[in-house]
Length: 450
Image (cartoon, rainbow, N blue to C red):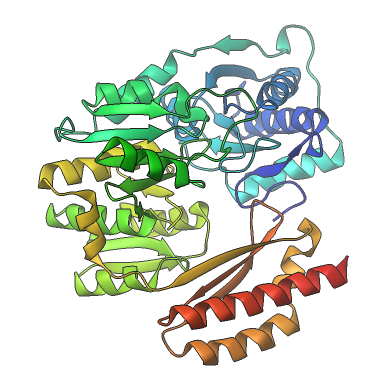
């Protein structure tokens, strides 16, 4: 990772790590690099989520891009995958999303897609970053200054495209959809109606500061309560930029990304359209998921945590399905990036066609006890703490306690100032004890390093 770009673009607190000055330079550098790369005046699509800082950063990006001689197509508040789709649809040279995904409102980010709707390569990100750091940014003048165009109706084409992927009758399912007061607020109600679903929509009134606030895929408690109280067949939760989706079944339990992948993978396999009967997951996927796939004739390839690494493995092998336990799934036959709304439609379509209650899918596999702890640390300390000798020694001892079926993963977050500690095993009590021990050691080392 570079000074600015992490595993998912640039992420920081707005005006404290990601301000207008940096956004302006990112716009200038991206425009210059893309113009050189494609040998013509570049066209860059910009979409955003509902954070209070998104308008501010959009204005700075637009100024930077136009000052370096490229044109901008503004599409307004849209999900992240919509920007990738519109970039391809409008034959643009790149797409930029202003969003910090599942993070709270004070954070924001800048993520860039290439002309094909895939995340910008590491090489191009490095060129953009090098240009910013060098300060050798070229300003255009006269007729060479870029222009701004607006096409907020482009999202309608995106909605039509998603709805067209549904061949099943969804009208038998009564749904409650949680938009996280984020980007799905602009699309979900129309999409589910167009797809023929009987859906009520909540947390779809963004005010700039309520995105992901006790709602959405990272805060499922309120949705679960409302599903039970209202007698719904399912609850659907998106994150702030709607590239993730988690499901609540009719009993109030969570259907996570592993279960969604298992159900969708089996369905694709039954139809003979799952390439090599293979799913690309990450090292975070539950042991129960692996056991289910092994017993069902499904092959699993594990990537590093992060959707860009899942996508790399999918592209390398030409695989059609991949994703993360967090609900970030990629259906490569339909989309170039994770799309929470697409994932929801695919999963719900399978449930409707089989006439099954969602809770019945939980019997697909037993989930082994797994605890994920997030320890807040300084960004500058993340990698050091994860690789510290004390952590290595403690992990080795903890692994012996868990036994051969246990797993431990300690890693720095690629998007937040966190060290993540994942512990999984057969015995829930031992898993909890080990997780507390290791998290305590990380916290202690973090305090000492301050």
